[in-house]
Amino acid sequence: MRRLVAAIALTLALPSATAAKGPVLTQLCGPDECRDIGPVSYAFDAPPHAPPRPGRYYELRFVGGGHASRGIYYEPKSGLVAYSQEFGNTAWAPLVGPPLETAGLEPYPAPRVAAAWVGDTRVSGDPSGYLQLVTLSGPFAVPEHPTAFEWIRLESPTPNPWTSQALVYYLRDRVLLTQGSVYVRVPDEVATALEATRPLDDGPRSPTIPWLAVAVALAGAVVLLASSRRPMQRRIRVIQSA
Image 1 (cartoon, rainbow, N blue to C red):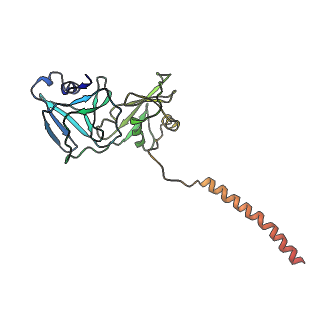
Image 2 (cartoon, rainbow, N blue to C red; image 1 turned 45 degrees about the horizontal axis):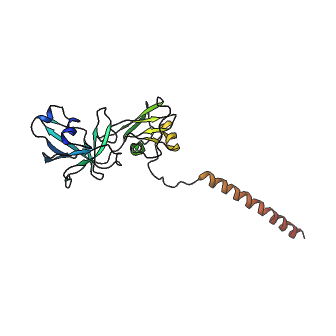
Image 3 (spheres, rainbow, N blue to C red; image 1 turned 120 degrees about the vertical axis):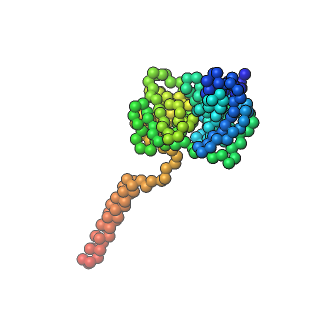
C-alpha cells in the first residue's frame, strides 16, 4: 500500500507496544501550546517527497500509553509531514486525513542556522545561507568518488526538520546528497565556498561601486585633460611672442 496508516506511522516514533494500549490521541503543537485533535487516523503518503522550502511549521504528536511521539513536524503550506526513518534520515510525505485546523495556533518560526560545519571546520562568518543546501536543486549527478566526502552539519537554536539531518558533500565530484536523498551537481561558486568553508550567498546583494574601475577611469581622464592642455599652452606662448 502506498499509504502508511497512522498505526504504522506511530511505530516510527512510539514504542511498538504503546500503539496497542488504548486510544492514541493526535496533538498539533506550536512553541507555546498544543491543540488536541482527538483520536483521528492520519496517513503519510509514500514514497517520500523532496523537502519544502524552510518556513513556519508545527510539531505533530501522537499521544498514548503514557508516551508521546517526538520529531514529527507539519509544514502547512506544502501539507507535508517530516518524520525520521529507520536509519535516522528525515523523510517528507503528504499528510492524508482530515484537515488540520491551525487557525489561532501560533506556529514555530522559520528555522535559522546558528552555525554550520563542513567536516570538522566551522564556517566563518554568517552561516544562514547554508540552509538553502537542504532544498538545493540542479542537475542529477552520481558521485564517481563516493569515499571522498564531508558531512555538512547545520546547528539551529530550535529543533526543526530542515537541520536535523547532516548533508553529504562529495568534494572531488562537487556533488551534494540532499535531504530528499537526491544527488545534485553543486554550482561552481557554491562548491568553492563549501571547500573554503566560507558563507554562502543567500540572495541578491546590494550593488557595490567598482572602486578600482572608477580609479582607473579617473586617472585616464586626468591624463587626457593634461595632454589636451599642452597644445593650448604652446599656442598662447606663440601669440604672446608675436
